[in-house]
Amino acid sequence: MNKDFKRGMYHGLPIMLGYLGVSFGFGILAIQKNLLILAAVGISVTNLTSAGQVAGVGVIAAGGSLMEMILCQIVINLRYSLMSLSLSQKLDKSYTLPHRLITAYGITDEIFALAVAQPEPLKPAYMYGLIFTPFIGWTAGTLLGATAGNLLPASVTTAMSLMLYGMFIAIILPPARKDRKIFFVIFLAACFSVLLRFLLRIGDGFAIIIAAVLSSVITALLFPVEQKEAGE
Amino acid sequence: MSIVIYIAVMALTTYLIRAIPFVAVRGKIKSRFFQSVLYYMPYAVLSAMTFPAIFYATGDILTSSAGTVVALLMAYFNLPLIAVALGSSAAAFLMDLIMNLIVGSW
Image (cartoon, rainbow over all chains, first blue to last red; front, side, top):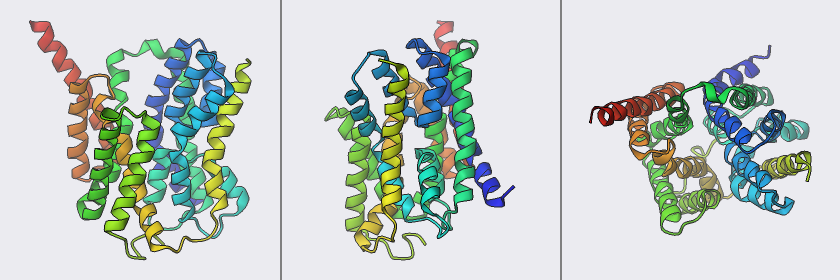
């Protein structure tokens, strides 16, 4: 097997475990909303996203319009555009159009976070490996949750909902210790995010987009990075 | 309406959101300002997704806070991602057990 693919798969393992827990919850939720097991798994296979899927199942369960479905997905998932844009700057020369079209399917928060933290330019094989293991976890977790969700005690499944957030902290905190500019942008984004949600009552999808754009623009204006820091 | 149509529309929308910038932007962005924004963006997105959501992820602020504190401590000491993820869940689980014991002994 290609060694970049293997390395990607290995890097994707913690995401796979986290996804098992989260998609387990999604599987349970989808069945509660009267979806068939096949539909729940089908949504996970074709979408590979957490918040968007939960909202989508809500629209389906409520018999909403297709326009509502589209708007809902755009608002919640718009952050992927920012991530795609950011990743597009980090691709190896071997990234041809077909590779880009396939890879685009698998850009999630966690996969993006790991990919962007790699020191070298990204190769297609590495990205496929990095998408593959989380994809298996996401699909298998949905299937397990949809079929056997009631078997695990609730105290275990609720505690597992913290896994992905724990992982996010493990991604952003170590670089923030070394670089005050990164600490600043993280702190600013967290403040905006809290303010937007609690003071202005803005929904999760929009709050994330506005907080992320505002804080990175402000930080970029205050502390522009050197050419070599910005990647390559 | 058929659920297949719902799922197809949902999947296509999500895919296009990801694919359009990924395919359309081919060259390197030259502007120092934009490079800086893109450099900071991932940290900002992850931070905005984590805070404040992590404090109510389990549906209970006490168990979530226990998990948050453990995650911050473990990440501060550079432990691997999966260890931090499992550690913060375990802390929330233990906090839940402890709370139940305290409430139960009343």
